[in-house]
Length: 219
Image (cartoon, rainbow, N blue to C red):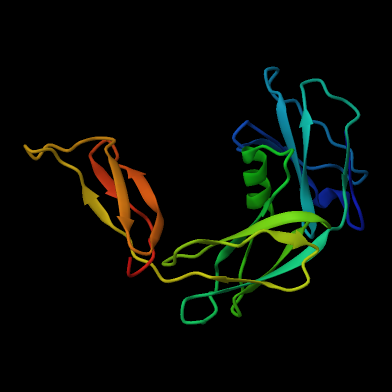
């Protein structure tokens, strides 16, 4: 096939093929003319993820022996996101990802695009995301030691920056045992309380150990 990124060098493009969950199975870079070729397993039938720095990623469905694919990457819009903690201080190094609300994409395709087009905040807590020119997106932010956050749906192009607050959190770890003190593998652990809705659900591992990851303070 041929990949055409508007306004930039085709060799900066990456064409990846995904499984049903959005995991990358392989990758190829087009040549200077945008031409690319790859040979996935005969049984593969899924999605191509096409990425290029400075342009929003696209997905295309394909089947084995597809030929003559034309993949065009066009400029979208720029979404500015600012991430701060619960004191208002900017968070450096937060991972910010765009979850594009495209109804024709599967959950795996949305996740793959979010990973490909995500970026880290700078020292001022802000980041620029390259997103589609129109449509709707939700912004997800994660940072070590903080509870992750998700924005309300944002209509593109956005007129104002997206502001996200990630409170400093804590985590609960422990072990589930029965009356005899024997670990209970794969037990369900639910964390409920005031200020925590919906309730969080976790599973113990094969040794009965659990880790809730980050949960909001003061629940």
